[in-house]
Amino acid sequence: MTVKHSLLALLSEGPKYGFQLRQEFELNTGAVWPLNVGQVYTTLDRLERDGLAEVDDADADERQRNYRITARGKQELARWLRTPPDLARPPRDELVIKILVASRIPGVNVSDVIQVHRRYLVQLMQQWTRLKEDEAHFDLAFALAVDAELYRLDAVVRWLDSADGRLRRASLDAEMRESDGSETDEAPRVARRTGARR
Image (cartoon, rainbow, N blue to C red; front, side):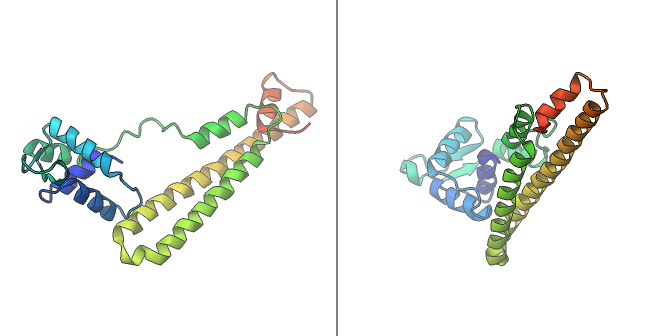
């Protein structure tokens, strides 16, 4: 989420001052991502510095200055709306890293680690679903933001299930190789990674 471009979008509707931008940002995003008013003013300063917005009334008190988007700001907003986010590289996801690290630590039952996180994610999904049922029919922006979060959490849960299955199969394969005497150098490492018990 980029605050800079969200503020440009709001300014494209007409001149606005900082506190108004903060309120409208939260209203337009279903209040899912609270925004600090200090961050709004810092971003407005940068937009002005970069020629993307300008002060409507230079003599007004700093907190009551109206800002408006410039022609260059409109071009930047249009470019941003049509540019896909860079998804070529996976983000550095703490949960993925945690599972990868846990799979390498001797004596750690990775399946237990996965289940702890899976339960937490399912609880979060239930909380979001209740919020959506209670308020979504009043607020389209909120409903859309909650849908996005539910789909994201669902994808993480499915990844955890897939990872759990893959790690269990790797552990079983290592145990089978060990029991039939065809154990390779890789087998003990896989068994250790997955927390397999001998």
